[in-house]
Image (cartoon, rainbow, N blue to C red; front, side):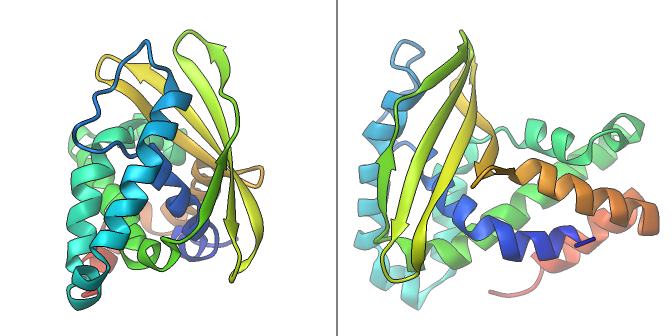
Length: 211
C-alpha cells in the first residue's frame, strides 16, 4: 500500500493540472444560474493566460506560483469536504483542533505540489465536455487534457457542488480513479501506524521544506 505522499507524486500531477480549470479570474462571479460547465469554459482561458504572462516571474521566484494558487485555487475547492472524504471513518473520531490542522496541512500540500508542477504544463490543450447534472446542486464535468510532448491525453472528471458562494469542487477523478479515494487508502494505513497526529506532523514537515 502506498502512502499519501507517494500517491501525491504518482497520481495527482495531472489532477492538479486539471484543477486549474475550476479557477475563475477575479472578475468572474460565481452565478448559480450560469452552471458549472459555463464557469469552467469562461475561466480556463483566463487562467492559462495568467500562467503564460507570469512565466518569467514564476521562473525567478517559484513562491509566486504558490501565491497564485492561494489567491485563485483555494476559494473554489471545498478542502473540508475533500479532507473529510479522504479520512473516511477517522474524521468523526478527531477533535476540532485535529480537523483544523489536518485541513490546513492537506490544503497546503496540494497547493505546494500544484505550484511546483503546473507551470510546466501551461501549454496543455483542454476539451471540456457537456456538463452532466446529477441533481440541482451536484454536477459532473469531464475534460480531456492533451499534453502533446508528455504523453497521451487523460480524462479528468470534476465532482462539483453548488454552495451559497457558488460552485466548488469536492473531488477529482483522473482516468476513472478518485483522487480522494486514493488518498483515503494511504491515510488509513498511516493512521494505523502513527496515528492522526503523526500524519498531521508528517504533512507539516513536508510542507516546511523549501521549494
